[in-house]
View 1 (spheres, rainbow over the protein chains, first blue to last red):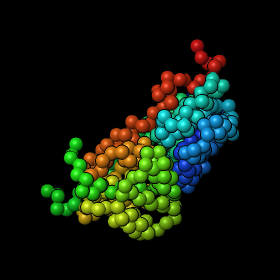
View 2 (cartoon, rainbow over the protein chains, first blue to last red):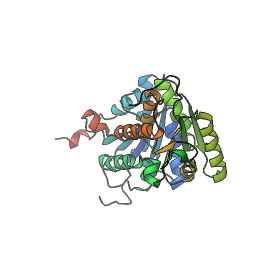
View 3 (cartoon, rainbow over the protein chains, first blue to last red):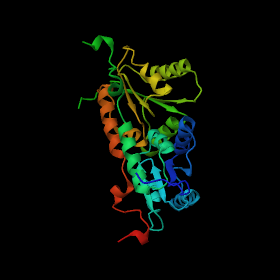
View 4 (cartoon, rainbow over the protein chains, first blue to last red):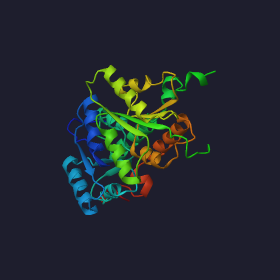
Length: 152
Length: 152
């Protein structure tokens, strides 16, 4: 783990989603665990022109990047919002993208120290937290959700 | 794979989230790939009483279960909404829960046939799709998001 310095800026966080789920996820994480510093959400509508999406994602990136680079969380890869995120990899700053955003990633981001780390290092942590958070209720509880008559 | 019969009902789908992200995710998936049959979303506010959450989740479950049981997607395990989902495992019907909901899961659910399968079978598919969808931009594109001056 890199040593964090209070004076170093945190890696900025930009969330890009189809519709308003990014803003909802950010609000939910902040309600559960407290504020996420240097974060912004961009909601994309299905028929937003691509140039407009790129402009808004770029604006969000500028608003949260204080020199430590950016982590961008996207909801799904391969769509216009994701391609707009890719266009941020233009060599002007350090950026990593994580696709498949879910709430446990944001809860982790509220507690992990984003100072003194590179975006790709934060991204690797968040990717693993996101993957590990996807579990079946029966794995977590040992309770099988089957009707009584099928139990034996 | 079980044989689907047009006359069999699909496994019902209930999405339970902190705040409105579930509704947003459902709308986003439907906008991208078309309607999700037999689905409902429950938004939970931070100070909703637990009994009230259970009542609303139960109501959503009743509204989409036509006899094939239920898949419940929750945003994170361990919180009140998740405990409300667990209370649906009461032995009255087949239920499986997947935690860590993300958009790729719902996109998959719009295309997978939920008829002729048990909830746990659909849940296993969705869990794997969700985990696989969480990837770094650099893995997907081979593009490293580092500033030009750091490339060598």
